[in-house]
Amino acid sequence: MTQIAFIGLGNMGSGMCANLAKAGYDVRAFDLNPDAVKKAEASGAKGAPSVADAVREADVVVSMLPAGKHVLSVYFGDDGVAAHAGPGKLFLDCSTISVEDAREAAGKAQAAGFPMVDAPVSGGTAAADAGTLTFMVGGPKEAFDKAKPFLDVMGKNVFHAGAAGNGQVAKIANNMLLGISMIGTCEAFNLAAKLGLDAQTFFDISSTASGQCWSMTSYCPAPGPVPTAPSNRDYQPGFAIAMMLKDLKLALASAQGADAETPLGQLAEEIYAKLDDDGHGGLDFSGVMKRLQGAL
Ligand code: NAD
Image (cartoon, rainbow, N blue to C red):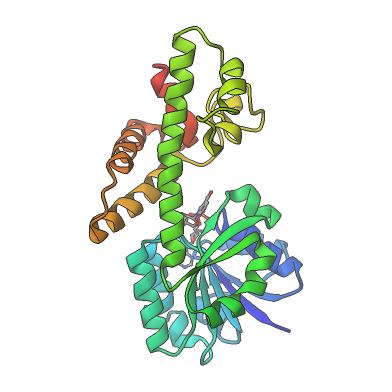
């Protein structure tokens, strides 16, 4: 039976790991947090006491870690994945990290003889639990083809974005657009309200006019028009401002390195950073609406 090592069993990784176990794979799960390992055991994986134990017999290593420094140290640090995995085994990192870190990791993996893909996701914890994530994958086509059956278990849409790091490029460019469009949508609903137009009426008009966008029709920041949106539960829980800020910082750092102009990305980063500094990092990113209303 195919054995999978899964490293990083947090908010996202726990559901992804559970779906691989549910699909019948022999999953060896490791996290620095023992409670996370216990939770993985309860969902059908076998707990591993270390990275080395998790990867030793594994055919593929999947990781879902906080940031680039964790990915580089888990894979290539002393006692890391590369030191203990079998020759030529597949590395599949799903964390959101910088393009530069992803390319560095892929280069190190290649030098050590391991195929590696970066496969960041779109979709939050609900999609991770339900196995309906979207994966954006960077890496050689042969590595993508090997990774795809595992990604299909954890996700609904799997895209090959091109060479190493291109999965992260797709992710940060998409999320920069999302961060900007959400602020614009908040401003439009706030302006309409201040000038006497209620949210539902504005939604009915704009969602069928040229202002239509995902931030409006799937995630409306004004309570009412989209019942499932976090705005209907006082912007909790959701896609946290702190997470959006992380993605914007990654986008801006890469933009600077590539000499790409991103003036609105910069402004969006400042707006979310101010909210985060003021202690609202846990609020859903559509909570910008509350700031515009003077409620924060
Ligand atoms: P999390 O903090 O809940 O989970 C990360 C896990 O990694 C933790 O359990 C932590 O203990 C573990 N970890 C850290 N260092 C480790 C190490 N050296 N060895 C083993 N385990 C280690 O984070 P999350 O919300 O699951 O996010 C994970 C990644 O997914 C991030 O890159 C994030 O940007 C991305 N992401 C998150 C969401 C979301 O909605 N939460 C959505 C899309 C993408």
